[in-house]
Image 1 (tube, rainbow, N blue to C red):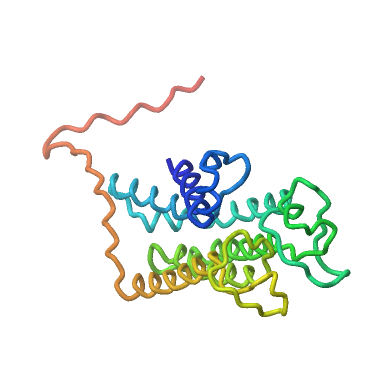
Image 2: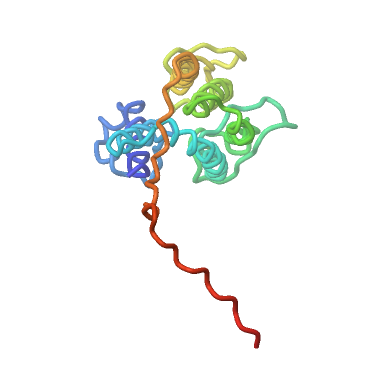
Length: 249
């Protein structure tokens, strides 16, 4: 169910961001084989499904979240490598002949944005490197955490900050830009504020608030279940004789 919720969430958020395209072509809503999945939406969908399951079965959600979040970071690394292979989520031109990824496949998003043969920022690899570093940090830090929920709060903060920076180099402007501000002198590729940057700031703020809340008002750890003791013999009950030693062969 978590996987299904993640798929639905990733699709719904993409549709919301690009609603004008789907108003013009409603049948495109079901054409997921043409792309149109957003990591943020998938993450939100998976979190909501996990929270509902834990609440229904009386499981500590934050404990489970801390167990799962390193795997989410590592899985996102592999996902971004897939993005790089497909040419989606690409960056803007680097402006240098010596640095940048060059794509030649006419079936990629890079081709639709008329950037074939142009060195562009490999933002997919930037994101993958950031998530790999976060994964290593979470694995090394997990035995030092003070309360359940600390790891997912740290991931929200670290990934939100990293994603905000990576978005400054993105070149696929069809992903949605709310405020167009150019930092590098290229009006075709605005750096602020994309939809993903807004979500990244929200993740960062929520992670900080969650970490402060968990450390300041720690929740009591539920006691371990009691193991019933086996009843012993009644006082005065004769004990069975010890077993006889084995006879020599």
